[in-house]
Image 1 (cartoon, one colour):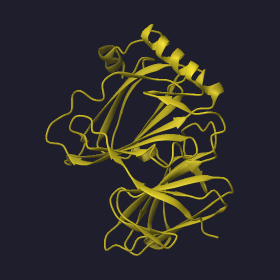
Image 2 (cartoon, rainbow, N blue to C red):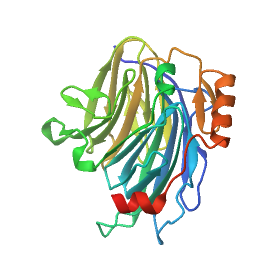
Image 3 (tube, one colour):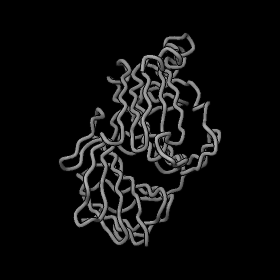
Length: 293
């Protein structure tokens, strides 16, 4: 049985500097899909100059951030001393744990002639026991992301988080979670099956597509019912199309989000702000961390 769509929505503009950004999640219909409480689509942009300012140093607590860089290169610094740059196809993952400060800068990929940047950032809500733990960090280059071609030249699938068949991401899972990037050639289809109560959403970044026999436009976010069933994608365009499928098991604890913090109560939000203003999250030493790399 095919899963039914519950609703569809479009993102709201949330630009940073020259980056055109659409806030996909949360939206007026949903505050979370599985463990995912936030999704920004950094729209494709041709950069004419190098971005030197990045997002600016800012705190997080209670979540893991996941930046998936389709095109470009992403430089990461944080107050736990982590530094890395990943390039087109790569992933930056950071568990903020009980508090961290980080900064990211997205630029075009210096290893290619392309000036294109295109990316996603997800926030993964952590179980309360993990929120109190130490921060952690992982940088994954594009050639390390699990990937396989679909049969008969129909396209390919990348597993950014979670698992699909024999593919398994190296990003830690604290609850059931998945992010699939599915690339379909013209006329091609793809079907995935999901268990009962699994929360699933799709996003169409650049091209329209049919999902379970419904047509959706580029830029649409679609959430589905929680019954067991399949999601069938079909690319009816004359050119290739991409679909992001993501979700997981329902988050079982209260969700209280404010600014860069996602906790389980307002008291914990107040504690997060207090600890940040008291300097407990540390500082980023940009020069030292870059020299160590």
